[in-house]
Length: 213
Ligand code: AMP
Image 1 (cartoon, rainbow, N blue to C red):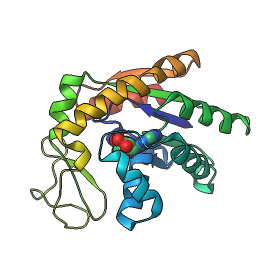
Image 2: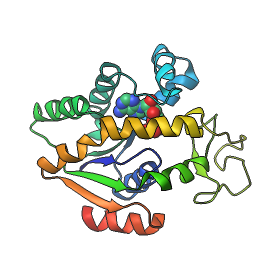
Image 3: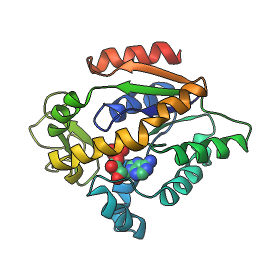
Image 4: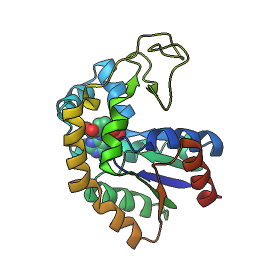
């Protein structure tokens, strides 16, 4: 099963993608996580990506597409995968379609987690992440067991630079201008499913499962 998660930054795609990945035992591939991991390790890709990420801008397509095309060709992705945060532009979607077509494949579901901008600003201000292992939390919706401490590795949690209010607002502008056209792209491909992302995480998950099953 090849699934794409669409939706604005902060819509909850990552959390849902994680749960879907566990339920169906397929890898969760998040381009944002890949860039952040490269950043932590100080790779050239990480350094290049940081320049864009810190400003709320998209990393250029040529850096992003090859990375994903290589990742989905790996053995663990043979039975399917869930892409979170990719594609984010029409050229990225076209690159993915072309790479899949070469193998006689296509995306099975594009799930749009729909959340209005006003909700997003509020939600993103509560996001926290672990600078060491990358785990994500939310002070209200996904609180760690001990306040501000990572459940996985015990490090102190931080607010990502790109979750600060001025950057969130820029990311939303970028989303509307560059990513929202993908709704039309995947509607035309006959695979778009929209879920209401303003509801509780468990309810959103149930709705997604009913679509996928
Ligand atoms: P995310 O964690 O998915 O919100 O991604 C964080 C940041 O990584 C984004 O604001 C972009 O700067 C960059 N990024 C992640 N995925 C992509 C993508 N598919 N294309 C371009 N930039 C991306």
